[in-house]
Image 1 (cartoon, rainbow, N blue to C red):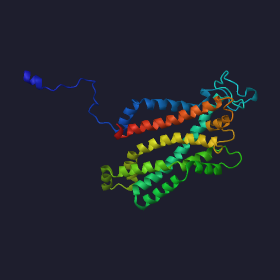
Image 2 (image 1 turned 45 degrees about the vertical axis):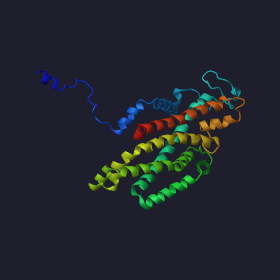
Image 3 (image 1 turned 30 degrees about the vertical axis):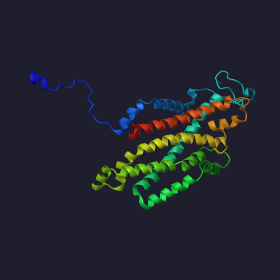
Image 4 (image 1 turned 45 degrees about the horizontal axis):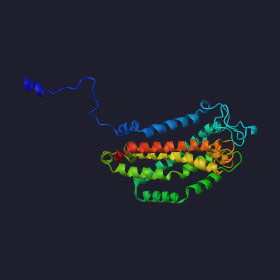
Length: 306
């Protein structure tokens, strides 16, 4: 009786960890790591606040960024103007809040344009290979040989020519057309790595066509590094928009932008530093948040970094 009792297996208690023996997918493992990352949560909080400022600026201020009066020129903080006033008597806090809208809109749509171009070029080069891969790779090399800032200035100035043009479309197209090269290279390398896997060979032996192989088997397993690159690229595009606006090539007219605010405040920095500091702080925090988010996602999805 004692021997039988000793050899009887002990069943797990009801309500125990039933999933302990189950394997998790790559996405589940990545999310498990992201939930424990302080960098991820810090970046997510900052990005959420910036997106709220861009979508609903009225939640943060009731002031009009275009309501300016020279009688308040370089006045200190008062009432709702917690950052004071600039050289035109405009509320610096209101201009900083509303400046998030144009920066986010330009950054998001420029990243979408670059993402579509980069995905198309990277998929074609990585999947078909051969002469098409060589041709597209050389085209990417030519694009990389063009200095980004110089090319952006020339293209944005040409597209933004004309009276009444606020420059939003011109800057968006410029950044999208010039910023896809790194994304294309990452997609190409991911596709080359994915198409050599056994599951792709098995699907090909079962008669799967090129379209099914690409969109059902290769792309879902190659998209993670690509998403990371686009996340970082979004932050870079926001900084690039501010740079072009600072140089007078980007947004103009009645557009409210962090880059425009920084450019206007540069000449009065010795008189009042606030109009220069606050847009710069918001811009730097936003760009840093997207780069931090991209790094956190990359670390979570890369098995070599676990």
